[in-house]
Structures are given as C-alpha cells and as structure tokens.
Image 1 (tube, rainbow, N blue to C red):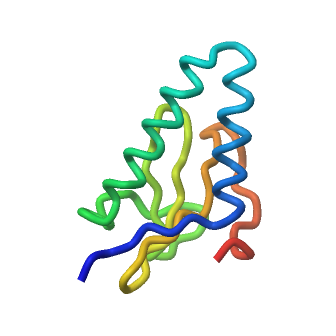
Image 2 (spheres, rainbow, N blue to C red; image 1 turned 180 degrees about the vertical axis):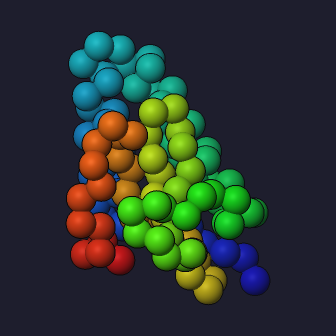
Length: 100
C-alpha cells in the first residue's frame, strides 16, 4: 500500500509565506527553496522515521527534517504522512497540536 503525503492548510500557508518572503529579494531562490522543501516532503514516505523526533514535543510519531534553515514537521500515520508545519529553525515552535 502506497503511503500518501497530505498537507495541513497551515503547512501550505507556511510554505506560501516562506516563498513570498524570499521572493522579495530573489524569485530564483524562492523557487529553489520551495522545490527543495517539496522534494524532501515527497521523499518522506520512503523512510518516514529517518527524521528526528521533534524535541519540544517528544512524540515518536511527530518528526522533522531540516531543509536549509527550515524545519519540515510531519506526523507519521498509518497509510499517510501529514505535513504539519514548515518553520524557520530560529523560531520557537508555536502550539502545533491544533494542526493535527
């Protein structure tokens, strides 16, 4: 059975905000960052537990992968991966519980 990658509305908004912010200086780099984030998200089903457990949460199902200076936070479910958030590494994690 193929594992599906789903995106929370908030994660989609996060990605849009990141791209918009970077595009103010460089549309080229904004596109490059977006493509890399999407590529990493697409790879997650192959090895979902390769990402580290998010230290602030401590749940083995909530993992993160680093893409440049961003944290791609996701939840491993049976049959799907839910992308929860994309957060700059220097930002504090906000309350993510409402996202899943």
